[in-house]
Length: 162
View 1 (cartoon, rainbow, N blue to C red):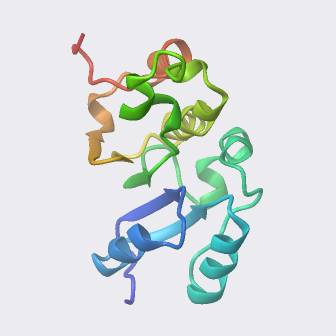
View 2 (cartoon, one colour):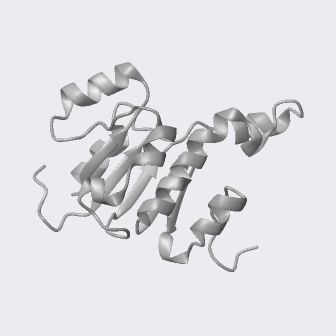
View 3 (tube, rainbow, N blue to C red):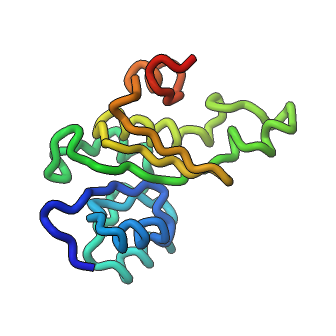
């Protein structure tokens, strides 16, 4: 699909083979970058979607520390959508059923989600979409107090929600 100058812009994390990104592209989004750690998925993205930038380094923790809006020719708040489906083992339903498995954000495997939230804090996109198991969370960033929650609780909640 041809993207126009005014097309909404998306940054994709945990891109996998690009299924969500393909749907966004079909809906008219310009995919500015894909963040994916799996080597096979990265090769597939590069081979099948010439127009998409697969960002380096592959680990989201490193990308979140280094990537800025200006790296993608944007200003903060210019990004329309930050989307992704982070690994869910530390806070999944299955982990909650097992007292020994539930460690939430203290679990090392939660670092990718925390890094994703750091990207939200850096880019301040209009919408953040987090897909988790059978739930998709989409939040308008104007309603978020991202910085204090990322820094203190690693939770994103609309202002005024307790």
